[in-house]
Structure formats: C-alpha cells, structure tokens
Image (tube, rainbow, N blue to C red; front, side, top):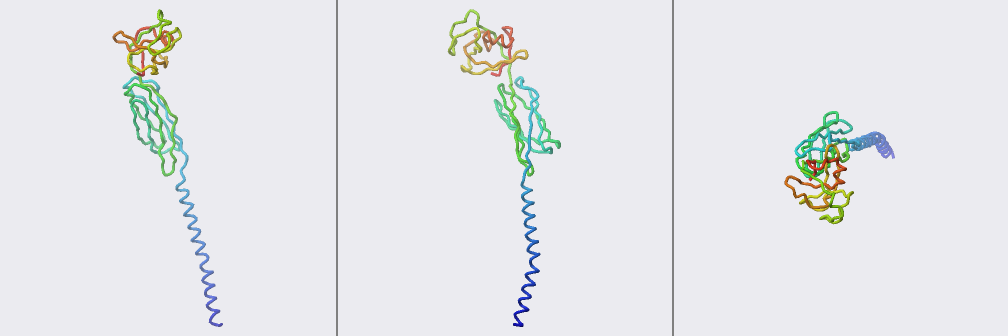
Length: 223
C-alpha cells in the first residue's frame, strides 16, 4: 500500500499539470482555424463601366472608363463582343479607376463589359453591358411615291408608312441602323436596290422622314 499511494499521487500531479497545456494547445488550434477562415473570406466588390460615346465611325477609337470598389490596384478584364471580338487585360490605379481606348475598326454593333478579377481579398464582379455602334458612310436615296401598292422583293406591299430599306446584297430582314444629322433609326431590309452607281441604300419615304434625310446623300450605316 505504501508503494501504491506515491504512484497514484504522481499520476494525479501529471494529470493536473497537463491540463493547462492541453487547453492552451486547443486554444491555439481554434485561433489558427479562425485566422484561416478570415484569410479565405473575400470582400464583395463592384465594378462600373462607361463609354464616352455610343456612336463612332469605323476606325475611330472610343474611350472606356470605369472604377472598381473597394479601391486599390486590381486586375480588370474588359470583354468586347461584336465584329471585332477582344479581351483587354489591365490593372487599375490605386484609387480603383481605369481607362482604356477601344478601336472600333469593324463596322457593326458592339457590346462591352468589364470584369473585376478574383483576388485574395476581393471577390470577382462584372459591370453592366454597354453598347456602341461603329458606322460607315453610305450613299443613299429614297423611293416610294408612285410605287405604293406594289410588292417588294422580300415579301409584302409597299405602303406610305412602310419602314425599311432596299439593298442589293444584305439578306432580307437584316436590321440596318442608320444615322443622319443626330437622328437614328433601325429598319429591316425589305427590297432590292438601288441600282444607281455610288448608292448603297434606298430608304422608304417613311424611313426618310423619320431620319430627317433630305432624299439623296450620305447616311451613316452599321452594315
């Protein structure tokens, strides 16, 4: 018995002495897990994008500008869809702003969107889609008076209120956006023509009036 008691006492002493060490180890593990959790938690971000103008002539450039929040030097990708598809990678300034020029070399309709790239502390985000149109100058005239009631090549009858254009090669139904003197209209190809040298489009009378076009001259067209 006198040998057993010292052994029990020593075991109890070891047990009592070990408890704080075990508790401290558990505390360190919990702190480490909390630190890892916070380290992997990304902050929600927001990115805006604006275009300086929505209508350009083919070959001209347009400035794109935007901002990422929270601010800081961050990676951004600008994705351009349309006739000239491209992706522009850039880095923002320290205040989160960015600016880049887009060369709209091909005529047609473009859509542009900016993406804030995932980072260690910031989640990815994307802007609203912005639209712009690249035009070319096209010779045009108009037709209608004296032809109302006649059929058109793409089907249907030409009437005073018919909106559309005639073109020699574009498929029937192709939507053509035209601009003249600050006005714009989008109409379908409904007929064939014109057959006068130097002219690309014949506008119906209703289209001419909506556009404020005098009758013969150049219009801006996205085809």
